[in-house]
Image (cartoon, rainbow, N blue to C red; front, top):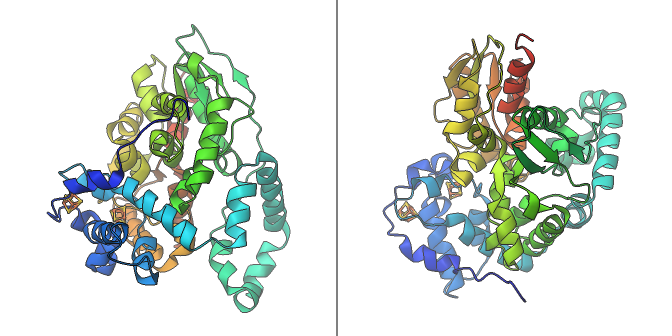
Length: 418
Ligand code: SF4
Ligand code: SF4
């Protein structure tokens, strides 16, 4: 295929693993389960044996790999630069072929996620359900008797806000300094329209023209994590064609999981040179706003805010200081560091639905750590983390709003004296 990118086999990079074990104490599943097979070093060993044909990809191996959050804390901890996730994605591709997903998963990945129409229809039905049946379903416990597998999913269904369709173009406010593309994504416009609003308005105030191509689709991150590499590649191709990326200074993404996946499109099996060049333009919204360094007027937001790192921002994109720097600018805002902020909250895509016990233990630890700093709000930069921490706090009776850092910054911009 012309322009096809040749990528080094991730298992060759694995040769860099010196089995030092530095990654073990940083691995959330090792912390919870205490089994070497549920640690990065153990999983690397298992994946290597499978690849060499010395171990079958049987249920035991798949269980240890299924328990991996894909949080990439092991990569940050590794002194040898082992690219764990690349190996994991490749092996998950093999698992996907060996153990075909259920029809529900196939329908969700092949039909719903790539289709804005079906996503909006799903959102409308969810809103209708929440306005009418939800209270009765929960109080009657009908699901635990008739469809126990759906109980966890229903419990975690976030409140779906009214729709807010984006325009295809937003002009810069003031002199134009850059022209950027904006990833709308699949879940973000439906569950977090306020984060999109804040991101676009901040970009405009930073002097950016914002292009939101209507032909864009889900970025494919969820496909990739589930092992559907073909699906991930298809989504990457659609977006590469939909965005006028050659004429853009950056493609801005406010979902850490999407940004991390898009920055690594060159590692997809069918990656092209175009996909790789597109992916070099991808910037997280916090990363990009810090680079733009806008001279904006900010007003006070007198709150104690606990910031929790999202794994795909910190470990996946190496972004630590930028969200902190943006929030530190806000007058009267006290930024609080959550102990062990770098540890996963248990969300990890749909991990909290597939592995509810481990995810629940990780969430409990996260909530204790967040509450230990006594915040009035919590900030985190990924939709999965926003949902997981919101769910946990609401469930524990703590009414602490959880927001994306750009929402706080936008609140401060709006509070500025005019
Ligand atoms: S990705 Fe996360 S859960 Fe998986 S091995 Fe690495 S640190 Fe552990
Ligand atoms: S820290 Fe890196 S080199 Fe050490 S065991 Fe873990 S993956 Fe291997």
